[in-house]
Length: 173
Image (cartoon, rainbow, N blue to C red):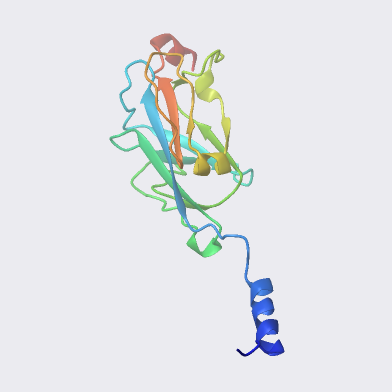
């Protein structure tokens, strides 16, 4: 039985040392689902405002689909970043399925009253911080104090229970 030569062992060690141990994040999809906390129906034909990290001052306005879901992807690769701006919308910053640079902080705002327990007035103006890492690994479901509808967290999914503004709340807006 032949012993491995010194150069073979050295090459193997060099390969082990030079091989990256961290994993690179390829684009991963995050979904933000708006659910009416009173009746459990999806809140379609709306939008969520999203900031990734602290770099952007303006929110990305991401429309929800018929299931109340807004999607974005996060990546470590600068070459994959694409905001998919759409001209058909009159608002600035409306994006469809954006691909953004990963950041640990994701900030979210919705144009509805959040069903979070003990939420203060004007919650539709509040911006809530979300851990991108936790969202990717475990998923996040915000509590529902508006009704009995519940959900279980799934990796990559943020579920927000909310309700439409009352006429009085709209008036105060």
